[in-house]
Image (spheres, one colour):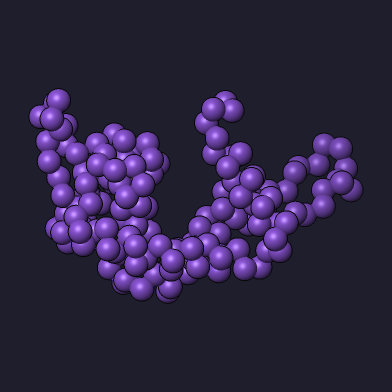
Length: 154
């Protein structure tokens, strides 16, 4: 961060976009996405598709609203992701038993297999993304990111 301690009272504060949290988070995210694409082993699988598959894998058959909550992906985007995953036979859709208007998403055998095969690579992506950090910095980074996104603290 630039040092502004020697600024004279009343002088304008310099705004350096490259030092702003949003810009730095975006650059870190872009780095993570590049590492994901280089290391995941499936060029057709995007990170958001993978987390959607993981959410269904971890939580079991899920409604779209449950997927939105689990993945933090908006409704329009999750619908497109679900359509693309269904077209690749990685997920199956069926109406909910108690409400036929509600769609339940479940993994197909191919989807289960893809998640199992991809998870070790995904763990490596996180490792590579944080490779410049020492162990204490990694713990601190994850703690601070969780704290930033914790909605219950508001």
